[in-house]
Length: 472
Ligand SMILES: *Cc1c(COP(=O)(O)O)cnc(C)c1O
Image 1 (cartoon, rainbow, N blue to C red):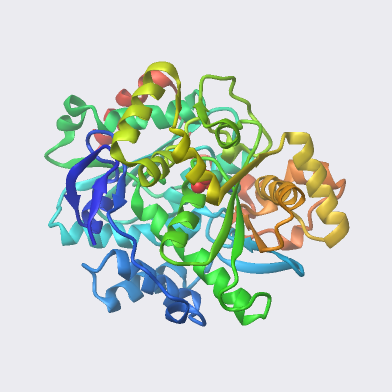
Image 2: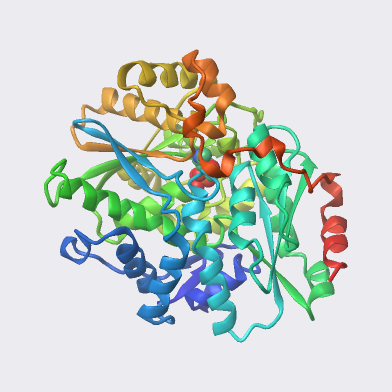
């Protein structure tokens, strides 16, 4: 299994190399050069861990089957983040928020530290991996939790000082392991993500630490983040067959609340691997860059940025969209579009590419008011509580069903626990959340000591990294 870069296809790496490096040096993202196929009988009936081991093993044949099974077991045995909730005859909610920090990022970040550690060892890398992460809220705590105390790693995560929820902030700022750091920046997620990506390409800066450390990423720009996410698309399908919701071979649509386009891209990878995926529905909030793209074929990030009630989707530059453009139009189109994005803040793709994209993808957008109205509706009708991100997806799925008349079975991906966003949820339903059901990791958060208090200007990111690494 080989990987290459979206911006330089002369590169060839193994999976472990791609995971250790995170981002390609010229700024491209690592992608597999082929997609292994699974036929239905390869995976129907497998339990989650067995399926995860199978899929991870296909992309990382450098590790033995026993090793991979061990990583998966260590990652998920105490908290499998995934459960399926049947809402109606034709629709289920895939709950991805039962992991260590109550957001779907845990699915990948409970496993990635094991993949990273084994990949460092496989490559004979003895320096420390300094993981730089930009977060719109949920990545930061999941990365810090995942890598907490992991030898040979250090995490520095940057989060927007305003815009994330109080719980999201506390989940980061109360972490205590010596190797994990959270720093607030005066800027939004895109500022943080851009700054971090620039550092990877800043040779003069990187070389200062070169003898002892190197920088890598645990954002969804790292292929190691996407890989564990492919699994739950297959697992859901298998569960739907098992419970007779669908027949073997039927298609299933998945609606995904989207920010950086990582989660939905994993669904596209599952389709490329042979899963009978019908439509992938990309749900966006008022920061509707992707919705507008699927309407017009123009990606335009030069626009106002909104702080919404689904903050983990407050993103204008969806990094993983570059991978999608690569799979649809090749490296040359990636280079053209990325140059246009850098110069003009916008790009278009050729008509033929756009048409091909729309064969699988649809997109809908919801503003804050529509989001809270749906939380209330679903609570009234099904006695089921959606978090705001999941509500955006639920609404997008409703729009899709109404517009398409498609009778394919629908799965809505639930990316966060409603207990992560109690203010929004309680205001929407007019009812207090049941304290007895608070996930363990969110309990007593306000009583914990805040240990991470740094707030910096965007321009101080490099100096802050230097300062943190000088303590070694
Ligand atoms: C990160 C996140 C998203 C967006 O996922 P992408 O993979 O970035 O598209 C959606 N909802 C929640 C709760 C998240 O944490």
